[in-house]
Image (cartoon, rainbow, N blue to C red; front, side, top):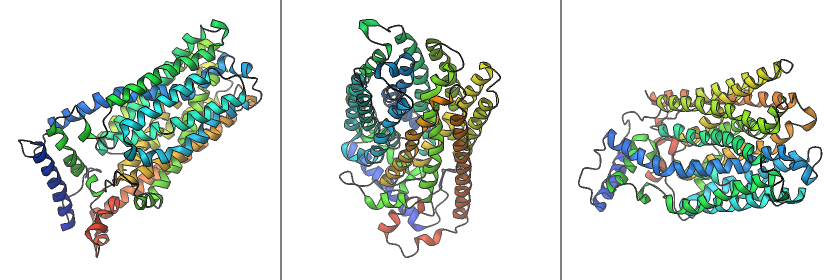
Length: 507
């Protein structure tokens, strides 16, 4: 049985739930004047609807994510252009400045997920983008360590809401087995941003001394300008949900509840648009799946931020010049993006998540093992290790991000669960900055060794979670969870969400 399809109804409740969804769909179609039956959505019509959503949603989200990632990690490239010298940073003060962003980043991630529906995505997303673009530009004018820390804290406040918000936002539009590839688009954007960061860093490095400013100042200022402009455009380009999308026909909009029903997500509650459903949030915080995936996310995020921020430093330590270092980061990110594209497509086609996430962790561990084992073998072997890490990195980080919302059909439970996962995961950014210590250059054995350990543990947790969810699906197939419905009122049954015996997990 496919892991995301519900089986034939085994209870009157399930039939009633399906009928209710279809009735709502029928009412919407009738209200909007649809001339055809609401349940006759063809595969080609659905594909056309999905293509329309892709073309209207992703260009702006991807561009903003590229800029978000650049604005967050460009401090790594700035280090190559005398940032520490100009601001008088010594010892591990640079690492301190890097980590400050994550203090506010992790603090504001969960609240932003909870208020997204209330504020409305087309208002919330543009507002935070314009804000962090301005902060990024202002970073180019700092003169002291304190001022840099203040800018990093502000950048964390505004960027905290973007990636969690857009991952959650995508669940308003797409089915469960459409999400992994869409999350790939975002992570491919981060790989592209890494490559772009290298090219931009190379180009702006040639501006060193223009108007008496170091190249790192120009880097911060120039990268902040397009973010601000695109943030304004996003207000006019984004829709709050499929019903608000001007690019969809009324018939296509009427497919939305049908797609939810076919996906099995109609068991979840949508929630009130004007208030937070704290009971659903509490359900998320009591769910073992949320904590298992959130804890595993910490380990792979250590790798993500350590690799993204310090890759220029690591390659520079292999003997390359500052300008050529930026060029050498491009093959790493490109290989990571290609591998993730293949795996994300396989994940959506098969419905498997945990197996691929664990495989990504294993690949990354192999890469770090190569780096640690070849510290005396020259730059070629070390660089090969960096590429192997990239091939596992995006799979290990990206697949679980689509996995969490796949298994939480209720709106506010999904918001709280995904927000909690990203909050805990990004706590890794606070300390990942310190495991690559200045005194460990050029081998960075401590940083590579700790990262390998974190990723290995995460891989084990992903695999264990997948096996447990697979076992739970089999129990529901055998009817061993049907007792959950006994004695419950329709309202209580509606609040079961993923605990409903007809619901099936992706694993």
